[in-house]
Length: 154
Ligand code: HEC
Image (cartoon, rainbow, N blue to C red; front, side, top):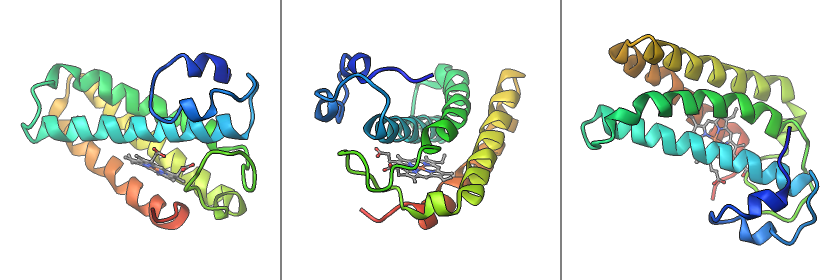
């Protein structure tokens, strides 16, 4: 299920204002925005988890929620990337067109991200923090591999 842009526009986050004028219906801009927000969730959660494990954050009580948030975002990403938005929409995107030419490979990489983040959440939910921290290494290995092939340079 997708939420309408109208409801997203109520959330005051950077980037949303640019598409607030678009009518409330699912479309390429919504697909682009959602996948980018979910990727940002990935980046945010991973950064805070990393800071916690390095002792640079005093927010260790959120580790469990962050681990589960990453696992949820990973599942949502596949739906968000499925629509081919090449040549459509007004939002700037760094997604390369080769994603939809190689959908099996790309979606396989998202499946692996989902499996790896689910593993971290599973260990953390079972109370195995050391195991969850170790399993995060596998999660991090997914990011650059995919970005190098399927995301344009800034
Ligand atoms: C299967 C491929 C794939 C994997 C795995 C992946 N990414 Fe991405 N990521 C992309 C693509 C493609 C974009 C560009 C999306 C766009 O601009 O429409 C992106 C964009 C991003 C962005 C920028 C979002 C924005 O604000 O526009 C961040 C941050 C990010 N990814 C973080 C991560 C992190 C952290 C991981 C690993 C935990 C990860 N990604 C794993 C493909 C991937």
